[in-house]
Image (cartoon, rainbow, N blue to C red; front, side, top):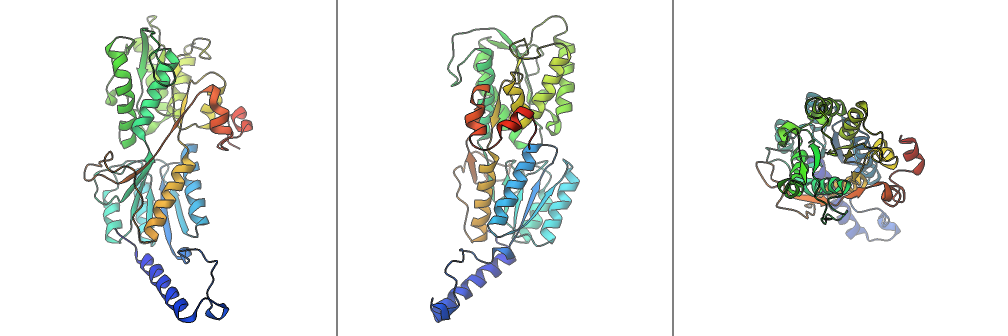
Length: 385
């Protein structure tokens, strides 16, 4: 375990306080404050939080949730967004280290691009918590908080199969045999999560592909072919347009698209509607999956345009990141519930995994509205309030 210099100061201060309390007693004359929280002095601890971009509302919510929770716990917080620019993020993290951060919570743009920053953090005894995106190829990643990303892929593929009528919502075969034509989209190859999403989805789809119930007419079934750099909506739209031209201009029907993220989904849907499909699933739009329950996509699901999205409650993720950070502040190791899955190429990083839910049009209210994630007014408008 590595602890920063300020943590030693905080610990020493706490020890001195306990010593004085033992000598002076707990009465009014002892000067003690029995209502003071454990770890008092947290305001002297600075935590650096690096988020990849503000172009996705998901990351804005993550950053705000982490910052607010840490500040409520009494810590100083340096929250930075990098605009999906790797040099900007490396400079921001360098600045956090030289600025005296005691813990780093990092959501990397490129999980392979922070090796030197992590070496500097290790030299300064700063624990590093990898946030939702695993930082690779470094021994200096101390902990990882994320969702069960393989299961995210399973859930996305199951949603697609359900939309096609091949399975029910629990993934049980219905007896329908198709065949159905689908296309596959993946996330950005420099994001470790994209590979977990893909593996979970493909393992789920493979039996149906093997039996011929689903077919990929383009033949693009490798993650390198399906990848979407930086998860960009425009990139996904362009690839879908190219697929429609190359594979579906002769009258071949497209029934569904596996999409790993709502922004990509909206790009796909724009391309599909642009050639006259839809405008809704009921009117012939292919089934399109998603992830992150972004407000614009939740509106599309409510309107019967996008079929589903995976809800990863980022409030819970932020909460777990704060729990991990506080453990390091208090000289403890965070609790992991997975010590096997997340090998970053150098070490298996102890991790805490959270569960996810699949959102369809009929469960938007219980999952998103009743939980306070979005209001019904925000969903109706398709814009966060």
